[in-house]
Length: 122
Image 1 (tube, helix red, strand yellow):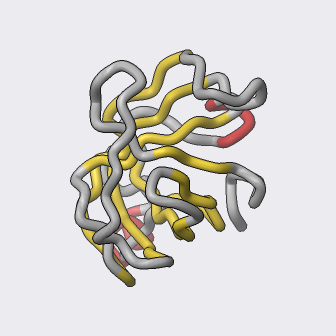
Image 2 (tube, one colour; image 1 turned 45 degrees about the horizontal axis):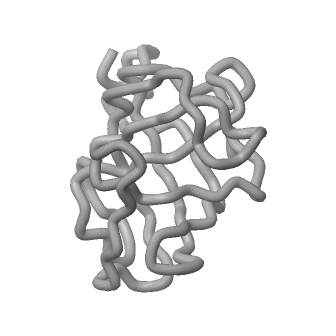
């Protein structure tokens, strides 16, 4: 079950204040796996997106995603169930060179984590 509603949009940033990456090498859809390395309050260009999330991309499970970080906005960590240090699988659909529709965000699990009963990477 996705932890973020399907109407969320994300923008790829270049790490500089307000700077947007304009990379057209990514195709229309991708599924990425990564770890949240930064999470803090920020203005994300939409009144409902009040927190900035930086996901360090660890693997591309499907499609093409050449960037090492995916930065997106969420309403709140509590509502989205996203935590710093958490690992997630994100399914994104490219809407424009700088905008992505987040189709789903799910916690990452693997066989070792499932067997131990502890979240992966914590």
